[in-house]
Image (cartoon, rainbow, N blue to C red; front, top):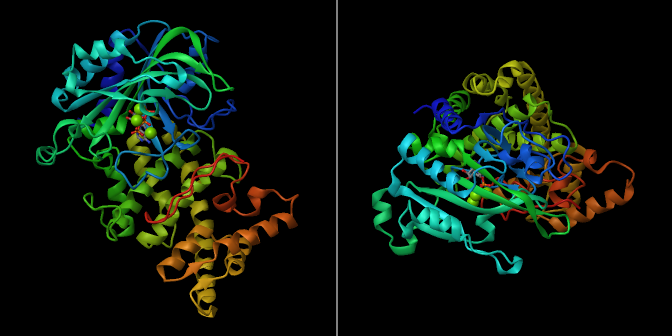
Length: 486
Ligand code: ATP
Ligand code: MG
Ligand code: MG
Ligand code: MG
């Protein structure tokens, strides 16, 4: 089944259950201080859950453009490394605002998956909230009993607060949830395990596809939970993951959502995508890079289409960093020294324009903005490499001083994590402490200057006032660090 049809069937199914189809909200949020990007389908309905507004229908359904690169839901470090976390993805959802609750939500989810999409019942698992003593929350017995009538009990898993109590962010509507997981391991792999290991949520091929959230609480700024005036249903299903299951492939990147982009990257960069390679292997890095680029071009294009251009602060800064991350992966692993990511927009637009016409109407803007960003960042990378070579040649011993690295970073805008990576590849080490000391000295010198515009990658080591997206090393061996607002 083609992805377009998968999406339509979802919406039509819920329409048949008296839901109104609504449009996706923009991915970039302008008016909510607690959230920079839409990270779930429910964001645009937050006020309805809180009782501050009334929807046009108390049953709605849609596909929502989401971006998970900051705050509570940040998947950036997984992207490219695994096969089912994206920065930008579509979340299919159905909502009840004070209308139906657990019974219908569970029954309809099961009906859609097993009757309409004909997914084999035997590969589905479900999870139920086990309760949390620290917050006086009880186990979700009601959901358990409803599932018990549909699914064999050994395929109902109890989940803790981390997995089965969904929260939008540090504040906002929340509640216990029931997730549906699908086991796409081969029969051979499954035969190797038994008992509870059959339900191994950490296995890359036991993938969560749908989350049914039973909204009952609001997390307040002081951390306490208050009961919402009514009970609601908020579900979210990963569209690309659903396509993976329905198209009988083992990776989201092997669905028709991604393959046109991947083929295009292969052609332009003269590289080969190996879907079976491991991200940790040397030869797997090319495929990681291809996945990263195919993913990030979507995130950046959809943001620009929504009016959020790359810039040096706020949401624009996050978008710029995502694009630069893609450029660096290309530069380092696909040997791309000329702009090329902008060329993928044509393919993306063709494929998504029916569902998201903004990718058609804004195509030229997207192409131009990406191309310009690529040109300017590639220049930086190019100059930086020559300079770094000189530094290495002049250095006696195996440690590059913080002062030299700082000069590259400060004067030429060369990303410090790239410096560290190149050094380690050539058997050198960066004096990180020395680098930080130099950074501090510079800050002391120019307190008045804007921290963000002082250096694009300052955020990597210091954190800034910006909401932050994650320290993205190019290698998996290096510890990945995340910074939060300071
Ligand atoms: P996971 O545990 O896999 O990270 P999640 O529990 O964080 O997923 P939810 O917040 O429950 O995800 O979101 C609802 C659904 O959205 C998930 O069941 C999944 O299918 C999909 N989803 C979540 N994060 C991503 C992502 N980064 N890329 C693609 N799909 C995603
Ligand atoms: Mg997650
Ligand atoms: Mg989960
Ligand atoms: Mg979940």
